[in-house]
Image 1: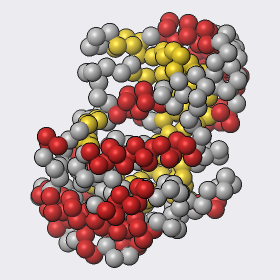
Image 2: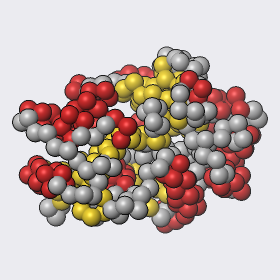
Image 3: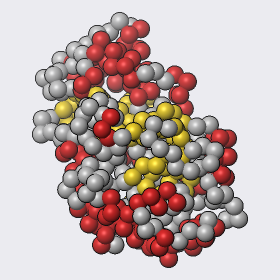
Length: 371
């Protein structure tokens, strides 16, 4: 897959204009590989009357049938023998059975290069040691969730002096670690080292609510930051605007909104999205984003809401070249963001209901029909 490797070696991580042709070729190359090596994927494309060779123009990307993430809950689609998988991650399973994604050696190498360039571009790497507060699970051998690995990996962006987890591993079971979190926050506030708070926005909001209810006001050291990701998931009913999070964080932790960074990603896609200074998720060259109408499944234009369809050619192990999430989103032109990044950016509106997604998945060319 020489074209795919060439795409991931491109040094300008948001250069869409310079990589559109290359991206199209990489998608065609990747889709052709999976068509030839995954019987189930070939049946899905044949069901739609689609062949990867027909990807001749950039506009053709919208014709590539997306795989709904709900379909992946039924079982893994593999394009290589299972023994050649080098790493496996699973989704959280909050909306049902978790999805397992296996990585090939090439994807791990390209992914490492991609991640390094994105982290450097967003200035998230630091040599200054930091204390970490992780509002999530402590890593354990029995836990393969991608979100857990991502949060733990984020503690290596700056040398870790100490890590405190909100959910502590007790040898096979997790225990809520409220006291440990409280003691760590107080101890961190008296340290000279910056603090990095990592976790789901809902968990961070609940922590801030607790601090407000108890009228606790701390001032974390200069350079401290908040790194959020994963959405609100089952806590959608408690969701608040980001501005409320910023207000509470500055009032109770002394962290201004300029020190917030947000991450978006799904296990089934393997490309991370980091927000800019204006908290917009610009699309890097390693992927493209389409928004599909919830009724017709046809791609819609900028500024129109619909289901989030993510494309990337990174995996050789599984045919996840185009996946359709259960996230509702809007895609915007890059020039509409004042940060100066010319790449398009998207905003997440929330998650569609399960029954709605089942209807949408059926409408997307009846992908599940007969398989």
